[in-house]
Length: 78
Image (tube, rainbow, N blue to C red; front, side, top):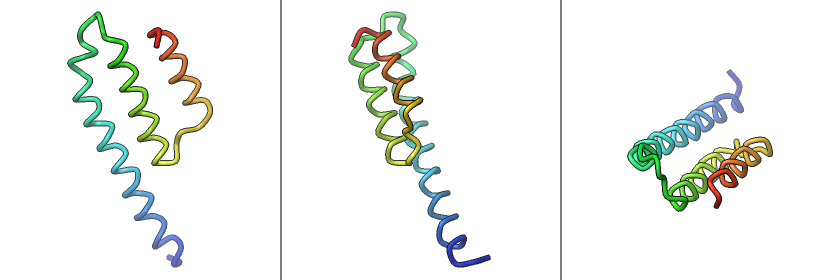
């Protein structure tokens, strides 16, 4: 194992782990709100913002994901 693999692999694993933990917390906190058929647009807006932040920090916020999230926002009339 070379030095780059020794340093990068744990850092990447840690970053992904933190992103997944954050997503699980978001899922739990929004689950009750989304169970209601009349979801407030503000809840959807906050969820999309949080998803962008988590994926952005993890380096996975690419153009297709941004487009998908923007389409969800448009569908929710935000």
